Length: 188
Image (tube, rainbow, N blue to C red; front, top):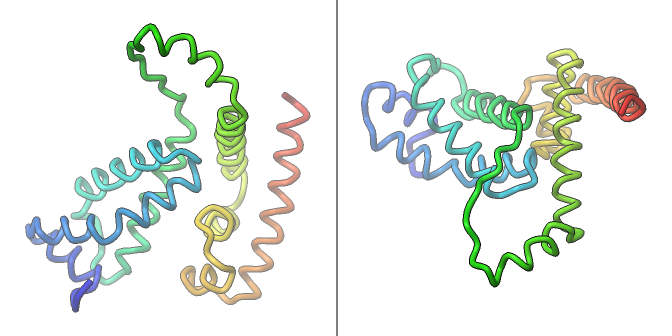
């Protein structure tokens, strides 16, 4: 990106400059897809979540406060979109296969990769449900470090908290999540 900051582009878009929105989308979409993939474990779902995020940004740009970091506002919308996507039931697309491919469908459905993808999706859905039981600060810190893959120092800086506070919050978040996930596992 040249001299214009993300905040400048967002402010210009608020004022009706459609090219600014396009530049925001072009500069941040790859990052959003990568983050969404960490939630979903599936590239197609990650692209869908990213597209939904941009639609939400478009609809709510008038609520963005230009005195605050645009990236933080965008990532909050994106994280909520990804979490909402994990809570909603999986939609299966139906399509017709040529007869010669029908025979391979059963074999493909039982591959190890398919099982891992399903297990990962189910675990992420349980994790997102368990995250709801955490305090806002615990949920935010855990998400930054373990889902968005920020280093602990980067997460502390981006959240405006001291490194030691982040580490303490993260410790209690992990401890609480472990208990919640254990109970979920025992009850299923």
